[in-house]
Amino acid sequence: MAHYVDLHSHFLPGLDDGADDFPTCLSMVRALSEMGFSDLCATPHQFAGRFQPPLDQVRLTFDQANREIAKLMPEVRLLLGAENYWDDILATRLRQGEPPCYDGGKAFLFEISPVVLPPRLEAALFDIRVSGRLPVLAHPERYSAVQRDPAVAEGLSRQAALLVDLAALSGTGDRAEVKTARRLVEEGLAHAAASDMHAPEDDRSVAAGLAWIDKRLGAEVVTRLLSDNPRRILMGELP
Image (cartoon, rainbow, N blue to C red; front, side, top):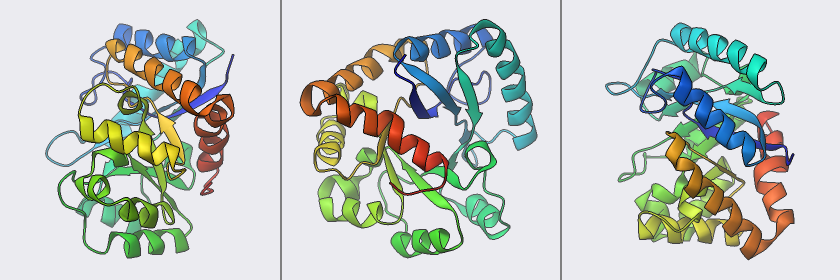
């Protein structure tokens, strides 16, 4: 067992554009476990106007799934987080000191518009760090500003953990995203990698992304990006 940590996945059923039902949820969890993941973070969307299930409903769904999976796959540990869209709702929750964090800790996952970088993003992230929280930026390879200018990624990486998608590293999908994800990993700007799994059939691209890191950079980098650094992030540390 490799004991990898997946910081980004949509396996909780019926909450967003991920798993539709519990059998699908179970299939996704089993697939990730077979790849070597022992700790899986459920990160359902919190995106106003699209997917924003009430947080008490998210917790209830998580608790139900966790109980069932603990019986069927006791070697797997589930944690609860959220994929927070960078919007007024997240800003309000941050001001109130209540952003949906990983496992009730200090780190939280967020995403931004792929087209327009929020104004003063680095400064806002710095302020969040000063407040004691650790922002974790989902799939930085998708953002046009990062694709155009590596310096943008370098600046963001000083204030937030950059979490690339394994599927992008696999070479499938948008060419700009693939190129950017691989560059971020090769240049050491990516702090970690995650599945961002939405359906059981995503397992092939996730596994291929893992294989690419291993072949290109070696087992030590796989361990750093999939185990060591994710565990530090969950503790609220920027690797």
